[in-house]
Image (cartoon, rainbow, N blue to C red; front, top):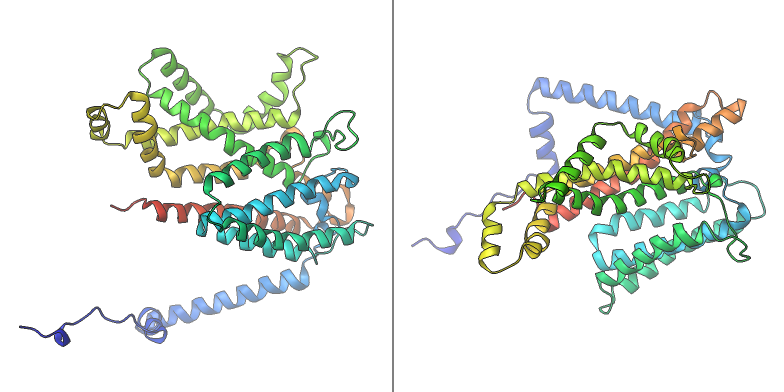
Length: 402
């Protein structure tokens, strides 16, 4: 018999120097390519760092950072945007405590970013100091929410309900206000702009288009002819039209078919167009997941006596959504970036504010690179963390594993 001491275990992973020698300097031409590549990367990084910190003129960004955040939202009502941010940061902290690694990276990054904004150059006004203090409060509020979220009495359904309440209060009550109200006076959406509009359209589009897309996907597979034909017609027509055309239809043409006294707010019209467009693409993504479910799953559920409604809701749909998580998140990331198209219909989103800053000040005409790079970094950060959260969810659910 073989003794325990004779059993050979798996080889130890190679050290850093061994990995470098094997992968980068294994022969003369690999060594030459490594040296050339390192030289190119070195000089590229040096030039980028020099341009960012010495050559670039960041005045179009630093002269009015609040403009990029909230547009022309009245500065005397800025506390309402602040309250909204406090609600979001607290809920991000609670989400980190409840859902842990799915939100951890985003929560930490958000706290660091808000801390940096506290020392970021701001408009020289009487509210500059309160804004800096307010920004410093948010990282601590994220940590407070995290500690509360770790309590055993706090569950995911509680946090989800709080998110639902916040997503209804912020865009419908706190930010717009009411007519003839002294506490929350009406603020028209014509002065909303910047990152506020971008997040409103993207989050609203994602939240509203997902259930509609799921219903359309189920409708396309329905045995009811009317439901099936309507779903097919809706999906194929919308997917065959560019988003900018749909935005024009909802922003301009829709008003021609409504009575003069029934005016729909321009941001709502843009949101409607975004939801319609995204729902059609989400429906096709979900339909792909539904088709991937083996028929045996349905047959086994019927053998257990489940009705069609319960089979779809409890057996088929969860598995289908699990399979298409990467595709759906990719669609949501695309929707987030597509919100820049609302600038064409007269809504000053983040990109629209950047263009306005460049066009209204002759000194900034030649500084497009700085403004567009700043906007690109913001979009990249949000898109990256959406992708990262999707990856963590895929690992937790075992997507692609057997």
